[in-house]
Image (cartoon, rainbow, N blue to C red; front, side):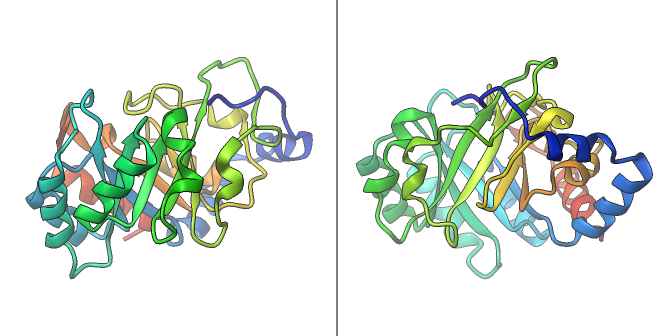
Length: 244
């Protein structure tokens, strides 16, 4: 789903007026409150290291076309290995149906489902209530367009609970490591939301200052090669966001 063209003039003007010094102040104010999700975790040692580094969420991918794809058994091992930490495990589902998503969550102990693609997002109303949802909205990369969520048609998102569920804004090609134009992005959603797509150590501070998300979500930005996480980069990224 792409972001509709259009913009809230008040919000956009406000963003344009944010000077570098003001952005730095806003980042300092927000950083200790912003949560972190490290996505695409594929093994237990990396999951444990990520939890120990202070991640609030880790994402495990159930999508055969992804190099970060894992099976149910591995996901169950990851969930079990980090139970003593406060880190929550998110199942990332692409175009699966409600029955498949519910089965995987029940088998692995995952209680949050991140929904990519129309098929997965159309399952919102059919998923068990004990499964919290992260509803993914894709933002276009067009540098010359204003991107606003004020008029976005989120379809089945009407079945979401603002107290339990979330939105996640990502680029048109999730997992590509490409960042959409934050300066032209606005949102008036009342949902807590994750910001994803192309985040790195170098740009996450600015992203938080501009967008003020509930949480940031990173995958390729903490990898030494595609699909292979770097524990040191993960730790540095988390420390950068949380200001520790």
